[in-house]
Length: 146
Ligand code: DQA
Image (cartoon, rainbow, N blue to C red; front, side, top):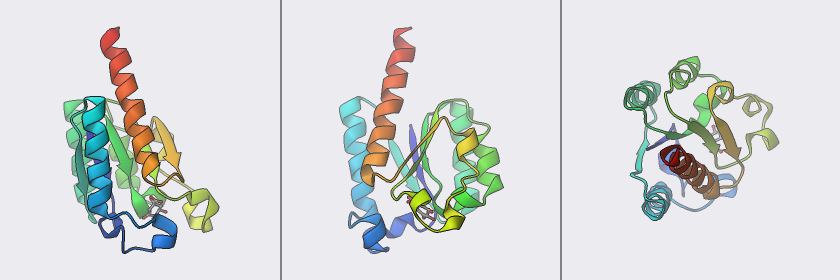
């Protein structure tokens, strides 16, 4: 499973800590990998500031049938390229946000990704990622028991 992070998320810890918290990007990646291990998941965590990287990683996930946890960061609000790549998904994809975009500036209220995601979890800090991973693990478990 892939955890994909968009622009500026590599600066977590230093970036507006009052909004995004003090955990660094390395800490976030560790938390995802640690929970992944506990859940028996193979979790790979990636981050890029480049839209094309996100699009290519989403293509890779679609081709391999990999579930995805995606924080598209600012691309959430305006990238039709990311949205179109998410629409090609062949497995569940959960959109996550550390902050609650609906409680912030108006330009953050709209997500072009949400309509093509399986679900969205926002406003819970790193727990947004933890809940998404737990949910994907539960779905994989249910699918394999079928
Ligand atoms: C974010 C929210 C976005 O509006 C913002 O552009 C980000 C981070 C979040 O995780 O809260 O970069 O996706």
